[in-house]
Length: 157
Ligand SMILES: C=C(O[C@@H]1C=C(C(=O)O)C=C[C@H]1O)C(=O)O
Image 1 (cartoon, rainbow, N blue to C red):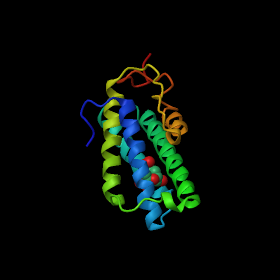
Image 2: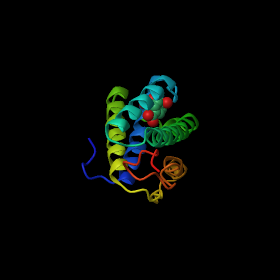
Image 3: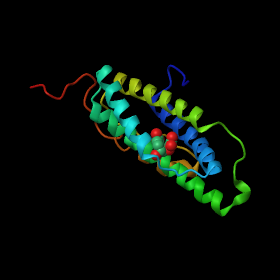
Image 4: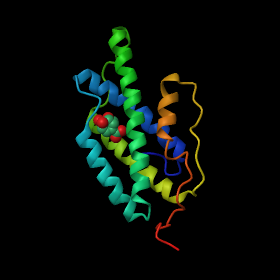
């Protein structure tokens, strides 16, 4: 479980770190990076969660779409690396179902943070890890824009 007071950028970074382990679990099992069925299920879930906590469902879905795209960028890069350099291939590691439960917990925490913060644009954190630089920009695509104020219905005068 994430720290209860983790900032939104920390949660995004944590989700990408777990994506590295997801890549290892999939690569070892010969599974594809993309799982469109799970993606659709997650998107439906965040829309429902967003409604429960007074967050714009389109905003929540947009932010999750970015997190999924960023996760897949990290995973694809690692698949390429491990294909080219078999010596770097990981051994062992957590089960995919355990990692997915962690991802789901982080997604819920992300929505909670999003509902709590103001509309100001957020910028991706700096990282020396070249693998994560572009995925981090992807993860912040929607967050980097001005957002509707929390609680705003969008139907006001
Ligand atoms: C992380 C995974 O890989 C991809 C990314 C997902 C995500 O970030 O939530 C969901 C499904 C996959 O397309 C996964 O399969 O669980």
